[in-house]
Image 1 (cartoon, rainbow, N blue to C red):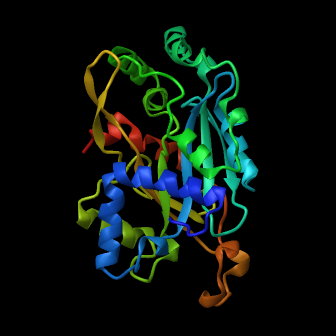
Image 2 (image 1 turned 90 degrees about the vertical axis):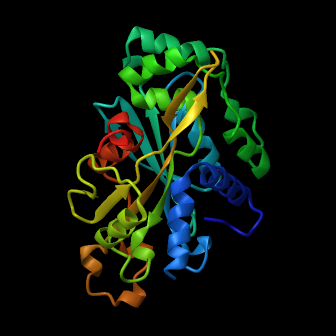
Image 3 (image 1 turned 180 degrees about the vertical axis):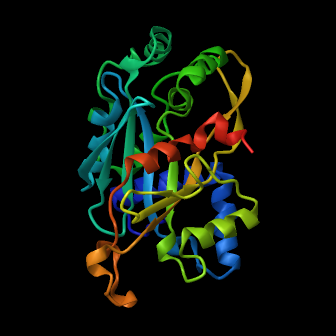
Amino acid sequence: MYFDENKPLHIVLNDLFEHYRNNVVDVDIITNALLEKGVVESQQDIVNDHIAFRTLGVPHLGLASFEKIFLEYGYTKRDFFNFEGKKLNAYWFSPPSSEYPRIFVSELRVSELSELAQEIIYKYTSSILEDPVDSLDLTNGQEVAAFLQTPLWGLPTSEEYTTLLEESEYAAWVIYNRYYLNHYTISIHELKEGYNTLEEFNEFLIKLGVKLNNSGGVIKTSADGLLRQSSTVSALYEALFSDNKKVEIAGSYVEFAERLVLPKYKDLPKHLITSAHRRDGFETNNADKIFESTYTTQIKGS
C-alpha cells in the first residue's frame, strides 16, 4: 500500500501503513508468503480494499472530527451503519480515485454506556476543549501523519482498561490505542488464480499458521452474496499502563475482502472487469462480526 508521489494523502496513507505493518506481525507473514509463492512481486502489488479506524463519540472528537481529514483529501461520505448491540455508529468513505482504499470509520456511542464507563472515558477526553483537527494544516501530509500517531489523551490505568473491557471491548481498545490504524484489507479478487477466492486464500493462511476470526463463520457473506470477508484475529501485545502495570491487550489485525461482479456485468470478459463492475460498499452483519477480531473470545478461543 505504498504510494510514490508526495501528495498529502500519499504521505498520510504511507505513514499509517508503515506504523501498522511494523506492529502487526501477520502483515509481513502474509506478504512474504505471497512474494515467495510468486502471487505478487512487491507489497505495492497488493490492492488495499479499505482501512478502518475506531473513534469515541465525545465532544470535539469522533466521526465529526475524524472525517474532516479525509473529506479534505477528496473522499466522499457514503452509507451509515448502526451496530445496535455494540453501540456503534459508522460510515464508509469512497476514495477520490480507485488507486486509494475505501475508509471505514466507526464511533462508540459513549452516552449509552454505564455511568462508570462514561466516567472513565470522560476522565481522559474532557480536557479536549476544541476539535484538534481544526488546528491542523491538512495540506501538510507530515503534520497530519504525525497527528494520527500522537495520543490525544493520557494512558489509562490497567484497572480502568479492564473495567471498560468487561463492558465494551471496543471502548477498551480505543482508550488505549487511540487513532491507531485498526486494520487494512487485502482485495482477494485482485490476486492471481488459485488465491483469488476466500476459500483458497483462507486455506493458504491456515497453512501459514494464521488464526482466523470465526465469529459468524470464517467467511462472512452479505445478504446479496456479493461481498465476502474474512479476517485474522488480533495478536496480543504487552501494554504498559499509567499505574506501571503491564497487561496483554489486543492490537490490530488484517482483513480480506472478495467483491464479486455485479449481476448486470456477469457476461463481461474477465480482462475488462474493473472495480467499478464489482460490489461496492459494506454490510452491517459482516462488519459486526469483523469487529470481533480484537475481542477476547476470538483471541483466546480455539
